Every structure is written in structure tokens, then in C-alpha cells.
Length: 235
Image (cartoon, rainbow, N blue to C red):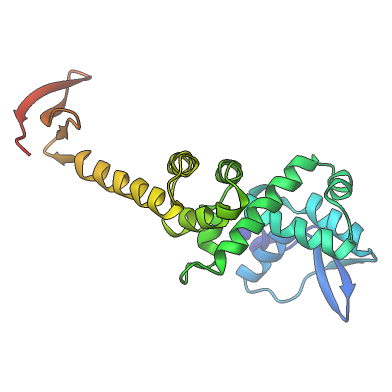
């Protein structure tokens, strides 16, 4: 799109609304970013009069970037929408044309991430957006509220995967502390890294069996992969 804007300009005006003496972008976010990337400082705009609720709906439905939003970003938008327009989750879902469960889940992701932000040691929101998603939140919701925030903090701080999050939740439900469960998950991850390694050199791949310590080598011959015994590791 940047090249198209550089050569042809913006063929369709972006849509804005006036808010407090400034303009809020409603539709045309990609076009606007392309204009900025090409150094252009002026473009045609269509100014519309919209109330807060209608503007939010237009922003959500007309902005192509929304499809790329993660659950954290959507939750941030939903929270702003609810507060600005004094709506319930059900009302917001009906207006936006999505399910109430989708709104609720994204709000949970955003709220959990925001609470963890105050405890993250300089991790920042960008890390939270990458670390907290709906699948992890669904797992963490299985925990009592009194320890849920601690568990979420451990997921963020240790950058646990969805599989590791499931293991932590299961361990906590068995009685372990979130910190201990997360530490065990991290230790298992590091142990797996040290045991599961490959060395590629001159077309040869060495693989160490995690169960017996056997060293195998993988070769490619006549269009087929061959796995053969190389040696046994004493370590």
C-alpha cells in the first residue's frame, strides 16, 4: 500500500470526526500510516458527525487493523467502549455485532494483563500482549481468585507457553504455590533444551535420545531420510 500511496496518492479519503477541537481517525488507518511512511503531510478527509457510541462501532467495523488485533488489544478497546458509552458487555456485544462471550473473554485478557503489568519488572505492555492470550486466561480462570493474579504474574514473568500454563494450573490445583509450579515448568523447559539438541555439520544431524542417551545421526540419501545409531552417551 505504501508504494501505491507514493505513486497515486490516497484515492479514497480517510474518515475523521471532530472531537474537542482535534480530529479522531475513524476509517482509513492503513492509508494514514502509508501517508506518514511516505512523508506526506496533507490528504483529503471526509469529516463526519458521530457520537461516541457510533464512532466506536465505525472504528471497530471499518478499521482493517482490527483483524490483526490480539485479545489484549481488543480487550483494551472494549473496556474503553464500555466506559465511554456506559454500556454493559451484553449491550456492547449487540452493538458491535459480536458475541458477549468474545467481549467478556477479551476483557478478562486485558484486565489480567493490566494487573500483571504493575508487578512485571519493566516488562512493559508489549510483553503482556505477547504473553497473555485467551487460552491461557481460560486455564487461569480455573484457579480461585485469591491466587489467580499470582499465577498470572508467574505466566508473564516466566513467559510460559500455553502448555506450560496448563501444567502450572494443574499443579496449583494440586496444592503447589504458583511460584513453585512456574519454577518447575521453567526447569523442565531448560532441561528439555539441554537434552534435545541437534548439531548440523556437513549434512549430518546428530540427535540425542532423551530416554536412553543414545546418539543418532540423520542423513539424507536418494531422496530419503535415514536415522542410524552413532554412539551411546554416558552423560
